[in-house]
Every structure is written in C-alpha cells, then in structure tokens.
Image (cartoon, rainbow over all chains, first blue to last red; front, side, top):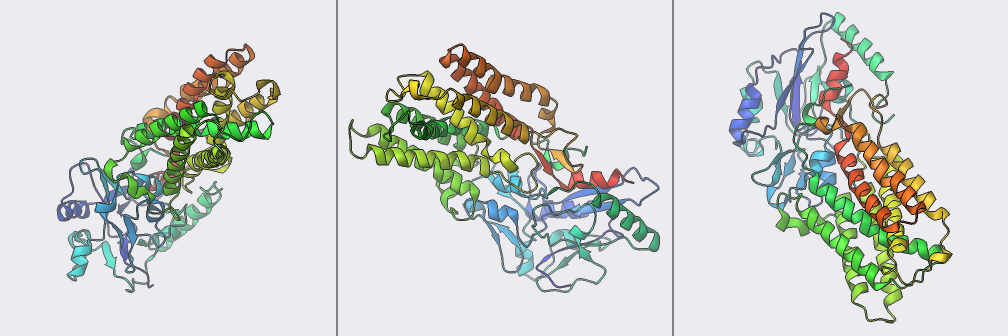
Length: 203
Length: 283
C-alpha cells in the first residue's frame, strides 16, 4: 500500500506502555497540560468475548485535513509529503481547528495562545530519523511510513476497522493491522455487521 | 451513550463566542428586520439613523467580544486571509462589512442621496452575517450544528430586530406600524422555536458514538433548553400580546444569550473515544 506519510499501528503488538507518549512529550518539549499522543484502551475490562487492545493515537495527517480547511489564517498546511504542519506564527488561537478535527488532534497551548499539534517530528524526518514516538516503541507496534513508502500488506486503512469512522471524509493516513486469527476475524466481521446496522454519523 | 472522553473536560472556553454570536445575532436582526419591513411595505429603503447606530454598536461590541476568544487577539486581522475557503473567514468579513456599513449609514447627513444604497448594503451584509453565524459550525462530525438549524440565527435575529424596531419607536420613526401584519411576529416566533428544537437532539436520539462537547453542562440540559424557550419564545409572545414591547425585547435578548449558551454548551460530536466505547458496548 502506498500513501502519504503517516503512522502504522500493529494492534497485536501494542501493550499500552506509554513510551510513545513520553517520547513525544520529551522530543517536542510539551508543557504538562498538552499531549499530542494518547493511548486509548479498547476493552480494558477484559470482556472474554473480545481481546484487549491499546490504540496509540496522534494526528492522523489526513489526506483531506478538516483542520486545514477550517483554519481562517492558513496556519495549517498539508505538505506535499503528507505532513499536516502548523505554522504557529500565523495562528491566532481561535481554536476552530480543534472544533473541526473529528479525531481530537490539535491541542491548545493556553500560555502561548496558539494551537499545537503533531508534526510527525518533521525536523527528525529531515535528518533521516523516524518520529520520536516510533523510535521509542519497544515492541515495534508503532511504525512510520514515509511519503510514497510501502506499508506491509497486513496493514489496512484505520477507517476500515470499527472504532475509526471517518465522519467528515478526512481520509486519515493512520493504518492499522487488523486482528489476526480465524476467531478474531470472525468476531471482527460480526462486530462490523452489528455496527453497520446502527445509525451512522451521516445518517 | 458514549463517554465524554477527549471532547470534553476542557472548561467552557466558548464564553466570548456566546457573547459574540448573541450580539451579532441581535445586530444582524436589525438589518434583516428592516428588509422585512421593506418587503411588507412598512419601511422605505433608507436605513434610519438611530437603527444604524444600534446595529453598529451591537456589531462593534460583538467584534470586541470575539477578540476575547483569541489566544493572540492582535493577530485577529489574519482571520481574513482565507475568505475563499474558511467559513470562519467569511463570518469575520461579513461582520466587519456590517460594522463599516452601519457606521457610514449612521454618519450620513439627513436626506443624503446615498442613504438608500448604504442602507441596502447594510441590509445585505446583515443577512450574510446572520447566515454565516449559522453556517460556520456546520461540521460533519457535529450532530447538533447542522441541517435546517443553520438558519436559526437568521430567524431569531430577525425576530429580535423586528421587535426592536416596533417596540422602540425612536429606533425607526419611518416605520409605519399600522402597516405591519401581526402575523409576521407569530411566524418568526414559531420558526425560531422550531429551528431551535431541531438543533437540540434528545440524548436518546443521538448516535451511540456521540460524545458531549461539555459533559458538565449536559446535566443542566433541561433547565437550559426550558429557560431558552421560556425567555426566548413564550414570554416575549405573551408580553407582545399585552403590548409590552420593551419588556418583550429584554426577554428576547436574554433568550438569544441562552440560545447561544445552549448552542456551544450542549454540542454533541463524534469522537474516537465515543466510537471505541460503542465498540466496547458489543463486547
């Protein structure tokens, strides 16, 4: 699969250790109240019907980023390499991108009065390094696909899995490995059918 | 119902926006109501100077209030950079145009040949501002801020402006109240209340993946909606029937503020946290 730059997350490998969150905070020197990456546990109560997963999430660097469309000043830019970059010097702190992003990616820095967001560690990419969160992942659950790079065939668009609807047609670049094994695949298919019968955001 | 998750728990930062949109709704309503007056044959094309003063003051105050929401207010003019793409840019431009037009209309000498043109500009800009207030938040993942509800500020603003022009004779001495059909106020009241109710989905009617923008305010949903309908619709209707136009205007003003509080405070949006909770519900 070839696409713009973005993250790959192997659900079977992520143990929710939080190293990616910490690495992101340290690399970007984020103040206490701001975090560009978060971990969402799925089925933390360990219901025996389904497995427990950990979703390590940051900005999805969407193909059609609603944050950039909404921004009145042009502070948000979708670069040709796929990175959605925030130019802080153009930001007026109106927080409209925060309202426009369905995935909760932009974070407001109340001290600086501007928005902040994941930039895929653009300075590190320039030096040929991986983003800090990817480099810190001890299980290689979190990976990085460069612009035009190939993702392993086991990965699929996140929005093809339940839990990652794309209500605004933003086409997030995040790719996930679906649950492996016959039983898990059957459970996933069942879940898909049940959820498809419900009212969807556009419904 | 899904948990609030990341969408909530950040404090009510939209306070200045409540004030901005409330003042702009009232100011835009004065212009829209004047257009309605022309349509029903109760007003001429030249915008009356006292009404132009009120409109300019309301929009000017609205613009100042909006600066309170910006992290970098001195960069505010940058918001006009993306007029062609960003709905927020268009809203700022429309509000700015009304302020400019209103100031010119208020400053024109009596009997100026330009009065009609300037008045027309103010009326058109007022309509654009009222529409833009509704359209700016029409986001696909926001469940409460789309559909016919985007026309609600237009209906509510026109109602407020109409009651202001009729209830305060000094605002529009050229208006001929005896030519005004009484049904107009009734239609506006019903349209406004209906569009408001369309905008406030019941918790049971919301999609399972919906998360409250402000879970802390959602607990007061019934009180907020009830107060908005009482002060913004029922009480003004009763006061107008009793001939108390001034009190009706005061009640409507409080209703506009409550309406905007309900708009931002009772928002429901799709979120990854909500979607994950929806999946968990089946495990």
